[in-house]
Amino acid sequence: MGRSVAVQVLLDTHAFLWWMADSGRLSGVAREVIANELNDVVVSAASVWEITTKFRIGKLPGCEAVAVDVAGHIAGQGFVELAIGVADVERAGRLPGLHRDPFDRLLAAQALAREFPVVSVDPVFDGFGVIRVW
View 1: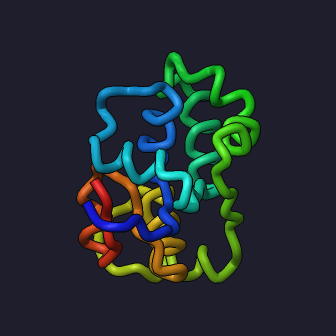
View 2: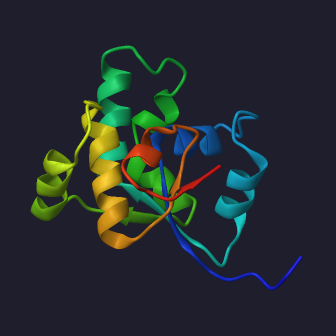
């Protein structure tokens, strides 16, 4: 294998949660990209919002340890926080397509604006023109 080159990648919410759980559902490529200490692994505030919201309404059973301190888990992994700006929200609202999930739309908008690939199993990002790592 050739020399490693550092990249910045944005984790989709499930990729972050699967990483934290050391889940076998995370692909080998995704695991390698996240584990590479040369890479900047980025977690959006949109994922924090999604995790805490879905945990609160009972859609993420078993994720309490992460949900009660998402920021602490992000920092503990050495990941980078990505804030949500007005431009991100505008871009998300203007993205074409019928996909209505606000979390996915916001992650796609942030990835496009920063030219970050997204680590995700979800092909919805392909429809937004986002480079997806899986």
